[in-house]
Every structure is written in structure tokens, then in C-alpha cells.
Picture 1: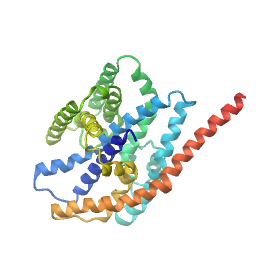
Picture 2 (picture 1 turned 30 degrees about the vertical axis):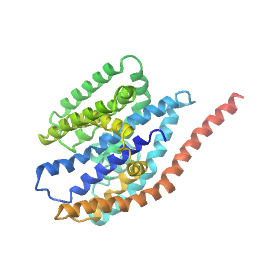
Picture 3 (picture 1 turned 90 degrees about the vertical axis):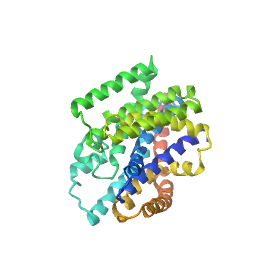
Picture 4 (picture 1 turned 45 degrees about the vertical axis):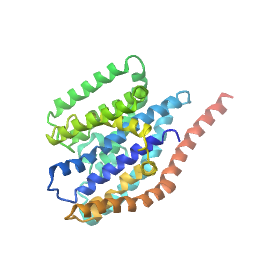
Length: 338
């Protein structure tokens, strides 16, 4: 597969996300070490960069398809909804048994079922753990077919810069001091610069060599970590997105494109939804760093076979169903034209 490095990027992203959530079970005494583990949260932004990049690749490949926009929405919906809906059910019962279900109102559940929860604070990250990123991603899907066409016409960099500035102006007007894991932080407006960066990377990635990629990754990772240390979360998603462009090029051009990362990346969506079962419900706080690292290995090794099963029995069948619906529409049109 030509783009195995993208699966590697997703594999690293899910490892980062698992690390940050498991690390919450341990009380760090070293602030630098805590910063390192907390930064795993930015694995979501690595997912966003990889998503924008691959969507551009797919859009270019399918540009001559019949019904390109509606087919895009069908593919995205059938790719996302089976695992997410399963997550809604699983975490309802886990909360019923371990915590509480006060957030599981009809309104909040419906918002998640309709993937509009990214616009609703009460529903955004309360029904499925980590569900905010799915809501934000789905909103990006809503805009993508039109955004892609708009960006490819004229000067892409100027357009992206203007949109990024506008996004930040809107966020600053709404909430100047953005707190980590707040609704303002999760919102598509703050995260849109990350997706725009992924689109820019698709356009200009051939101009980046391995050395430039390493420099790009190191500089912007350092800036992100510094901003994290001083708790300036407004710009961290965007800055980390720039660093991840360098990381993706490094994965493409170096030995780091490992089969382990690729295999985790293939099932990263199911891993993302399922790993919270252990991280937030089943595992208990630990008193040592070694135990915490052991928990990370346990979570990956436990959720990996489960995610493989879900990919085979749930993800892939519904992806095929979505493609059948698209092909059926095309077949009906062709028969009508005859």
C-alpha cells in the first residue's frame, strides 16, 4: 500500500491518546514527565491532520464520480456511525453501573445520534468518552467537499491564512482565555486551523524533504510543549498540527514507518472508542510509573483483538453497505438514461 505511512501516523496517534488517558490514573511528581504524558492528548490533532490529508487524496481520486458530494457523505456516515452508536450503548451501561447517567438525556443522546453534538456543550463530550473529536470531525466532513474546491482555486496559502485568522478572531471574541478540554477548545472553529493545515500539507508536501520535516517537527513540537507548560491552549492545536505535518513526512521517508504502527492505525477508530472502557471504568489508580506503563500495554493488548473483531464484524460490513448504496444510485441513473 502506497500510503502505509498514514496508517502509521494513525497508529502513533492512538498510542498517544491511550497514553494520556491511562496516565490520568497516576499522580506525577515530576512536572516534565507529566507534560510528556499529557501531550499525548494531541494525538487527536494528528488524527485530524491525517484525516484532512487522506480526504484530499480521495477527493482527487473520485473527482469524476457521479454524485461526488452525496457519495462522500454516505461513505463518511457508514464509516463512522456503527462503532459510534455501539459506543453510545456501551458507555450508557458502563455509566449506569460505575458512575451515573444524569447526562444521558433524550436531547443529548439524539445530538450524538445525529452527530450534531459538536455544536452543543451539554452533549459534546458526555455521552461517549472522547466523543467530542467525532463531533468535530463530522462537522469538518460537512464542510469538506466545498472547502476542498474553494481551497484549490487561487492561492491556497492566502485563503488558509485568512480563514485561520477569522477562526481565531471568532474564538477570542467568544472566549479569549481558552481552557484545556473546554467546549471552546473542542469546538470546530478552534480545530478548523488543524484541518486546514492538513489540506495545505496535501498540496505542498512534495516540497518538504526529510531534513526539513525533522526541523518542522522539532521546532513546532517544542513550541507546543512550551505553550502547554504556560497553559496557553488557544494556539496549541494549530501549532501541534504543523509539527505533525513534519512527523507524517518523517514516517513516509524513514524507517519509523513500522508495521506495528500500521496495524494499530488500521483499527485506530475502534481502538479510540473502546480503550476508554479500561482507562475510565475498569482500571484503578496506580502508585508507580511502572504500573502505569504496564496498564498502557494491557489496554492496547486487550483492546486490539476487540477492535480487530469490530473492524471485521461491524466496520467493514457497513462500509461495504455504504458503497453498495452508492453503486445502486449510480446503477439506477444509468438505467434511467437508457
